Image (tube, rainbow, N blue to C red; front, side, top):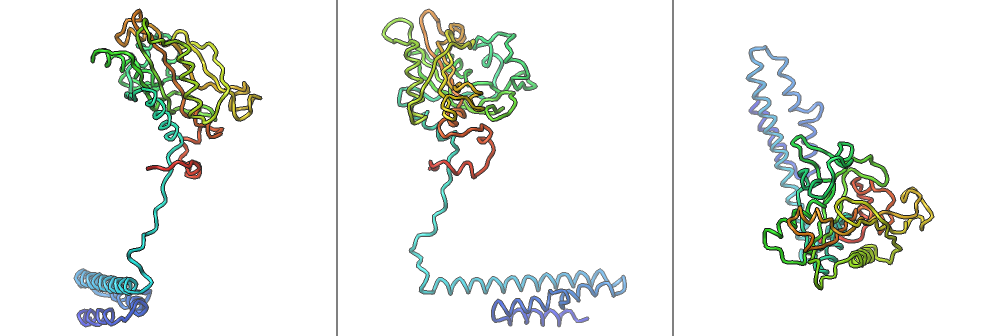
Length: 352
């Protein structure tokens, strides 16, 4: 079989195609179910065994060459069509293109950014710390006893190297105090610590194993004009909630036990979903726990390198998911980690 003659005829047919339609016809004649190129490749099986390798190699090489010629001719037609379109009077190269849609920020990011802006305007500094923590910073330095249930594996994700995934952002309090003391502590110290934390929780509409907190710490001298007291703590918390929830809220302060503060409090807000009547979100109580807080325990100040006889402070922490749920009326915390674009697209703030 004269493959050279076939090659010249097939390449000539591709080159002779005057437009895309003619090229499509030529391609069908060559590569269709009964096309000439396909028949050539199939004919290899009818040859003697000793002739098949050489002929098959030549047939495949010819097939690839014709395919490349068809692709190149198609590109020529596409390029010519583009030139005609650009030369036409309907195209204005100076007209702006279609603006790409702008994505939205995650609602937790929106609220976190607003809180950071608020507290920095009040003189706080943003601090950060590792998500993989030591037992000392996560528990010991925060005055959490060795037999406290929070240390158990049903509450904490322990790692094989005896470290753990931090269960709160409070370890950064002690790290920040230690760093400030090394640098020559100059009171007052005012810091916020937003970040991700982890708990071995049963996931439901109000609990997640991975969530976000924002910690706050204020430390000043115990004597003099600093005036740090529970009243300062309550005022700071009310200011925070009023700004981030974009409305005045009804709150209550009740005693609460946390090893790292003394005295400790729970700051609750009236449930916006049931208006205090009781619902699954507030566990039928009419209130949502949102801001554990209190005066810094003397042992925490000591772990940070400060004398509790000389210094005093207050600390607070909030779950950002719960703040976001209150602000936007979201009744299931699992939405935040679901990744559903329909959920995320509801929030008006756009990324910059």
